[in-house]
Image 1: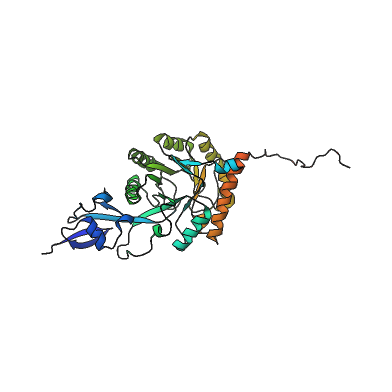
Image 2: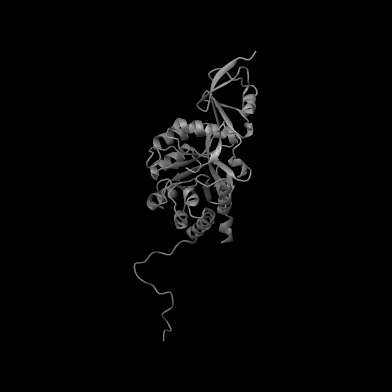
Length: 71
Length: 260
């Protein structure tokens, strides 16, 4: 049975299946974990722990990468 | 001359050859960005940290065009107006890239993009405690520059004119005072419009120059990137050569003795 939870990614609401870890979520989003960084509820998530971090209802995620930028 | 060319530029314990740091924003596409960076000879490039567009994860990424193994990525906090935002951004950048060297800038005003030094000092203190190597964008106030150095910033980067204005070095007196007192590299960050501005900064004794718009918004960015490379090298060489004193009247270059 799939329970759906609601979370916020980069400011937008998203529905995902309960019990997913961060690594699975990034794969579902087609994002290369090596090229992004993730903040969860204002805390940096270490890349080495993506598989251990279970996404919970109401989590607020920021997923960022490097883009061209000067100042 | 060759000795000076080999003189290294050391930031936070790492040696670089090029004294030109370039931004990677405002270019037509990543292709042009990569070519301009190549032409500039820069070894350090500034990058911004932004939200991934999760609706379109396959769009091209900067890292596919500028190899982070070849270039030192310098994540910045452009667009941050509070210490907290800047600190969050750089923590993410460090996790994303795995490097400690960052560029801190906390802006105070949309119109002037002038740095907010109170927030900048606060952010620098926190970041340095967390082990970051902080290159800091700052006002041209020598007292603030000294305070940032005392906090442990690894490079002091005063503006020469407002960000993106291309007005050139408006404050040579302040820049020189900051250089004189500093024990860490001083770079002019913001204000350069063309090659002579970069040369002027270097002739003042700056250790380097950071720029983006002057290259990206030139008619031919690749050609301007190359011009900037030469200007920074020429300005550095002239600084070491030591310019002649300025005189109020003419002084002939040919001997007067033996004149017919």
